[in-house]
Image 1 (cartoon, rainbow, N blue to C red):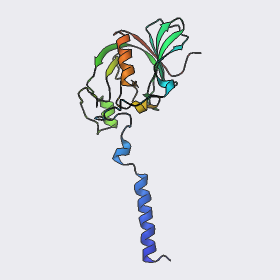
Image 2: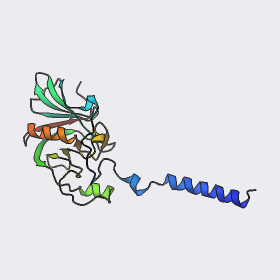
Image 3: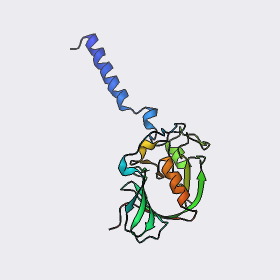
Image 4: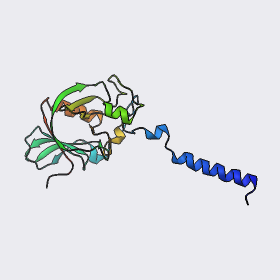
Length: 197
């Protein structure tokens, strides 16, 4: 039989295990959306995720954006089998998609209004956040058709190259500002889960 101290010790240990198994409110937050966090401008992307000109075979005309979610890259087609390639963060499992859209609207330092679906999943999020350095949409946003999806900046540069978002595509602020200046409203955006064969 257990003595009283031994029994209390085992009960305390079991209670500690139970508490550890129940996720806290903080653990339930989407680590890719942190309102109020100011991006670390000194953060350096790994070399393979930095903007660069690459060989890219495509039937799409120059000026088209091609997103390859499995690769974590966004390509801006240049023609002659070349493209500007940007490292991106993509939708986490269950939030990835593919399709053909156009950029319907562009905004600098956009306000953030999380869609109802996101609020339902993450009720702790603010209902509105003015544009600025602590805004999860970052420095620029390009809105895709009439969907809730965007190509946008981020205040979490460490999430580039990961699958962490609710379906949007995020770039570091310098890259999204560069892309924003290169593409007009109406730009064709092709989103693919896997590269063309």
